[in-house]
Image (cartoon, rainbow, N blue to C red; front, side, top):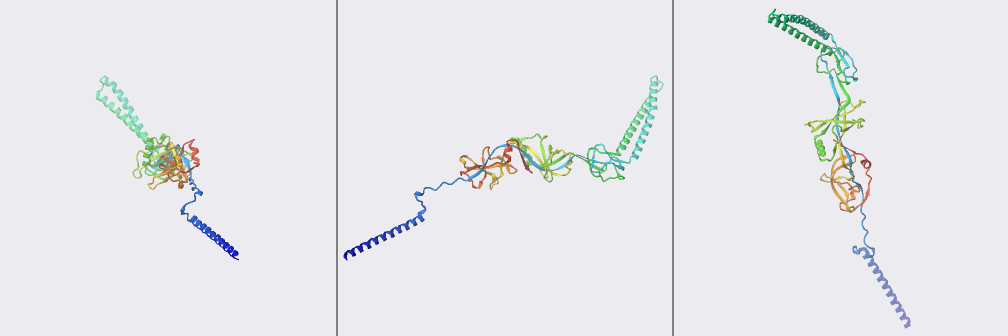
Length: 417
């Protein structure tokens, strides 16, 4: 019995010890879990260091200079190459009108005929007066010749011979006066036939048969305009003209010969005019009210598509920038100061900021004067992810159709005014 009690006590002690150990282990596990959750922000050395951040990916284009033809788009109006207002040079009643309004006429073509009766009569009268003067001249010359022989032998006085000479001269003067009167009458008679002074297209006329006209009247009988070729007068600001001259002086652009500069034309509806014109000259004075200079260009007009007074836009060649730098507009922004800025990928693929000087917008590109160098890698995609001084992953971006054209021919650069 004693032995059984001793065994029972021993078993109870072992069980209590085992239960205490289990409780202790559970408590230790709970503490370990709490420490893992709080952890004081530290990771176990067994987990290792955190992985490095991946550089952001950006798209770049390589800055490549190429010849760029610089042009400027200017507004203007068409004007006839030649214009003539037909006016009568003698007065009278219009007897005939010999043209169709709006038709083409040739120089010297008869347009109007004024009643010639009075002018024909004036010519006949002048011819008669001339004949009378010539008839009086003949006996005066005969008498002068006879007295010349007699005065040599002292048969007549010197005074008689001098009077005979004076009579001859007076008769000759009378003949000359009457010849001039005949010529004037003949001219006036010719003026009764009004002809076209130039070739061109004749407009409408307010004078019909039976209308009374006067010499050199204010109202023109008709107006003739030569439409082939045709002038296009455009205006350019004096400030732009000065800028162009400075660029030429610095050698930034190569000038065209002023007499051979090519000009293209856009019509009122925006469609291109098929014929190409040339720059003729630039006005020598600046319009004070607008601060602009007039440029005159000349265009062929064989189809008569252009009419005087039409509003057009001329694309004028200024010159060629042999080392022009064109970059996409999405790669250029502006800072609060209004300066053009860009980001480029420099050494070690790190981002570098640049301040640019841009000349003009050309389609979806900027023409850059300063701030970029050939070979620079300009960021055009992922600009928001690129921070100055940070490394980036570079991906090349296709530059578009201009990139291929630049290698073979100048790129037209059009600036509007």
